[in-house]
Length: 118
Length: 106
Image 1 (cartoon, helix red, strand yellow):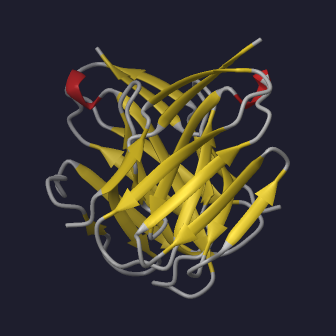
Image 2 (tube, one colour):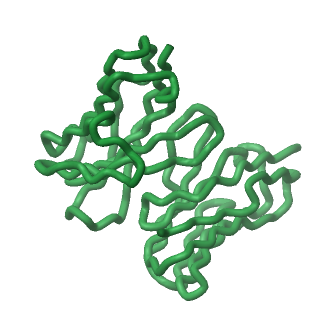
């Protein structure tokens, strides 16, 4: 089956530092990847949609300059949380979608990255 | 703006009982997804419903979609403890409901 990995699985950083999270589709090419944030005991909130080779589309209320997304290849998307603060502490989950861009059929989710900002 | 409402948000049930989780959404959509999440884990895809009237079953779980009513249901039959988890519906694949935290007690 399709596998999506995330790295790191958890990270603890000091306030003001930047953290990069990688999302990789291991056995398929993903034209579209999604980044979600999930606070404890809450639902998943879509942050942005990332298409290979183009700029990410951010959801309303998500700061583009704070959450930098790069989808440089068909198997890798990265999310960089810049100048992280304690309120950015959350569980970040990516998903990848094979097939034609813009057609959502099946998403494969990564295992998530737990970010704690001190 | 697309809104997705799930109910109940919390569900405690005894083993062997049946129950249904409801997912209502506010705009037209032909794609409805159900996911399971265990504590501290990511999501596991359960069902993808792609047309009006679609019904899918896997084990003790059955999902259906009524696009005219903008309603999907996840029915649990003869619940077992292993089904304890949080269940999410998602419209268009990425707009999630609040989740239903299911606890199945012996």
